[in-house]
Length: 161
Image 1 (cartoon, rainbow, N blue to C red):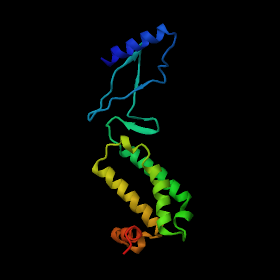
Image 2: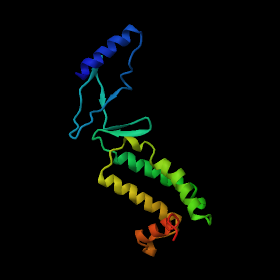
Image 3: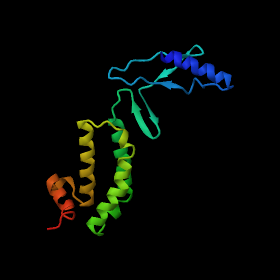
Image 4: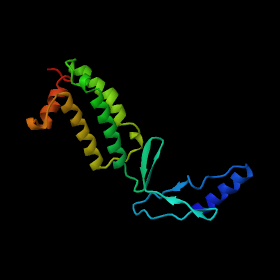
């Protein structure tokens, strides 16, 4: 079926004087049990790949988003660390939180509308959130501050007594 579609595409291409570069074309089957797909163009088999980047997002053959989420978190952490002095400064906590939400979370959540979140992915995102708030509050792991304590401190600004 897919081979027939490719053959038709090649036929139409030739009518318009264009040609597909077989060296650059890849194929990927998205499935729980991914196995190679055999597609031929001019007696050359297309390379099967397990993942590729499309419009800035990583697509994988198992359809999961864990790799993409981890990459987005890494980029967001790098952005946070570049502006660490600002986020940990003596500026008003409410203002610093707004900066983190606008600047860091927009980086972390870029493309999130296409993600299929599983429990493990949600935990990665929650851990990243705590990582941000702990860095903002200058809490180091040796202080053994519980997540609840950090969240109370950060969210106390949202709900003043």
